[in-house]
Image (cartoon, rainbow over all chains, first blue to last red; front, side, top):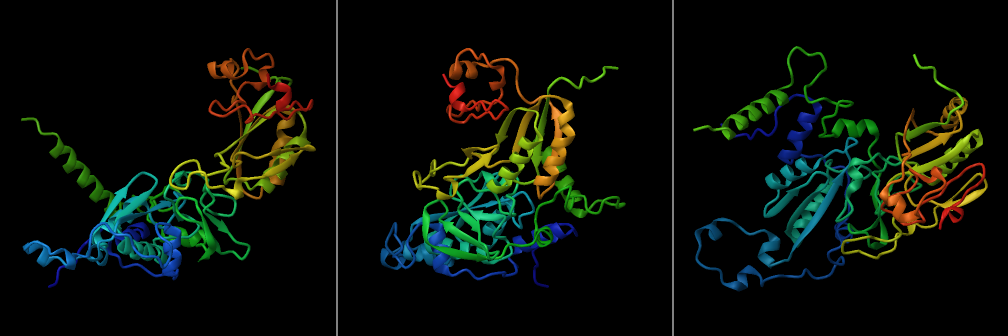
Length: 255
Length: 167
């Protein structure tokens, strides 16, 4: 029988969503053109050449190394691209993803990337053409709700603040805006420099849909213990207690 | 049991469940102003800078945050923050119910309103550094310790403005 990885315990909707994020088995909700994703990232103009830190690997004459022979380089590494980043901020008000789950998604599903997890933001670094593909995958999938998540290279503090009146995550630099047609538009790149043209990111999720797709346990949404008043806690809590117990015991070793 | 006096001033905090757009903030502030009995009022919320403060885009203008003019009680002023919390002092408790009704009329979203003590009464070192010895104690608690002098406005029956208060 083929090995099937198990990602996250629990039968709550949040547990199921967390498994989906980690496994990479995500629903595609929108299709934002590659050029627009590149423009929002702001590292290079769409259509411009990729800057490189070394010549393509084929021209470099690599040493005879079994690991190099075993592992095929990513497209960006093979071409010698610079390492670039994309950073996301997800609102605590039921955004579909959270920094930890973006990092799990990146570490498990994206080759040659370096995810960094912080309290309010999540950054992934990779070779430029790789990070562009990974960023587009995040934008297009159910990991992202265009109102509650946004790409922010700096000033990320909207994640822990109340939402704006129109349901958008607060952004001091106003990088995204709600259009009169109900669509969300990106008007600046991730560091706040205005774009040449607005990028239509599509309609945001309704509150009910965001709660359905979220990976955030919340007392006013889905609590981590599972159904309130159930005879048995959800498996997620049991697994967490188990890990906590082992970590505490293993960390404390009087000898 | 201590009987509450209805002639002393009371302090109130209004917290909407979401950040207010300038139009909603203007409507709410006008309703509060119309209710009367206002001694002082403070608008609180995250800063809205006019240009990108740091990062690779530093200095790029943020046009969305410029010219956010609102008019309250016939007096126009520019919003520097996203309105997320309003603290105010009323002349007496008799204005409280009217204030609550004013918020219900003006706000399209849910909100919390509570009485408490929100303005400090003794001068801090920052107050002293910015204003010297403060004669008018209404100013205490309205000063953002990190901001420059222009982040201060008092709306009152006497229409005391920042220019009157600055030294």
